[in-house]
Image (tube, rainbow, N blue to C red; front, side, top):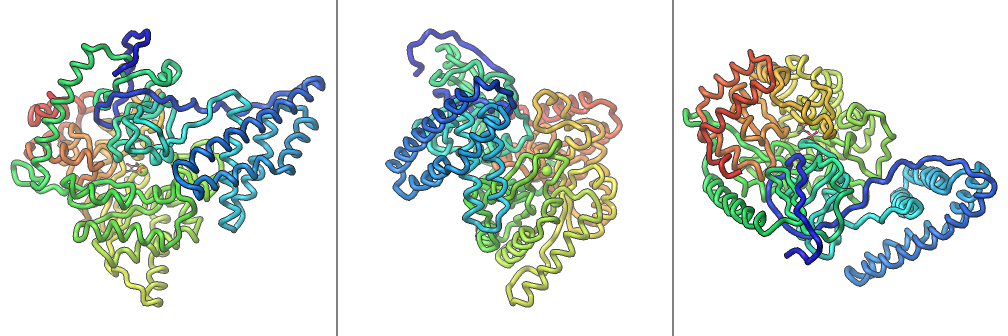
Length: 591
Ligand code: PEP
Ligand code: MG
């Protein structure tokens, strides 16, 4: 129960991104550190600046020793030993002397000098071919972060992997890699100032089944550690210091959701078939092999999107062919004979790894990402493709390439697959000679040349998350323009239809694996447009099935016909909502 402190109920509204209701104490993650600015100092200020740096280095050292002690007690000496490397960075006299020289020589502030020198060291280390030295780059960046926070008077970041008690995390932002690290047993829910429904952080929350609200603007600056709050991930609300009345109302809401979950649970073993007998394939999206067991439990018939990049994010080192093979094989074996569509690495955009320094880009989503990165980083791509090919011998594995913008990239990627198949044959390593290869259709140019692509592929999977951001020029991460991110925009409806027609003209299947596929309101529209398969987060599969089983394909087609002639996104959305509320009122009354 909330502690006795002066309190009045406060409600904050944001974007609901992961269903569920939780209550608990707030744990505030520090705000994103502001950019490091360069400040010119007078001669008089220089001595004091060096003194300030030295004090902060001593403070940082003390903090690291304390963390090391806590980790050693909780997890053992080996884990604690990891922090020795951090202490060594702080004790590196060459580095520190260089920082001091920069402060004195260029008469600049300590933050700027430390950041400049440490970043140069880290970049040099990261570029070295040696695994050990490359890891030192990560240590260097961790320590730099701590020193800069201390210099700027900001709180140190909480280690989200090792929390002491259950809590609701409130943060300005959480990166996908932070979210992937969240301790599922301790994090009751999370809320962020920024973000939107299709940011990878939101996708990860759904996958982890952690209730989450994003796009709360500046909530993190209004709240305090330890305040009691209620987070409603269905409606996108946080209530701080909820009154007894609010808590009682929510008890009722929680009961209603539990009843709905039970009702949806009854559908698990039932097929996704419309009232007029049209069979739909329902698949699930996963981020790691361990999620495969959830797939069957959700009632899905396989995996429509395995986001392989999470194997790389937060890994101690770049996973090689063998480590990747083990992971893909685990998914293939667990789900056999059900299909597992493994998407090749989609790094870049908002997903980065320490072991592969990606240059800072003005527009990372338009930059060195996914297939573009893989076609240049041949060693990484080779190990990746070989691992997927090898796993194909162990189950029903299919593979697809992300971010294909035209035929040239597809041809290059296909040629590499052939090259690695030849290698494996020579080595007598088994793989499925007939493994199906598909492509994600998520760039408008790919839709325009879908005919050419379809001739060379076995399936398309439409990535609506990116297709919408690239077609409407609306950053999928930016809450300020979230209202412009419209899945029912007439352009999007027509792009999907064009893709479906191109695929069907060439006799190949089309699936949707973007977040549209998990939105029960939009499912009838997608099916009416002719989409064959839907792939959504496991937690969303039951409600998609619920809608499919109450729908007639004829109604869905009439809806799609309307949408293809309607000129307004709101008009299309209204009709989608009207139909879904008519056929599946239970789903909405309880929400
Ligand atoms: C998409 O873009 O719709 C998609 C499924 O891929 P991701 O969300 O990983 O970019
Ligand atoms: Mg995408």
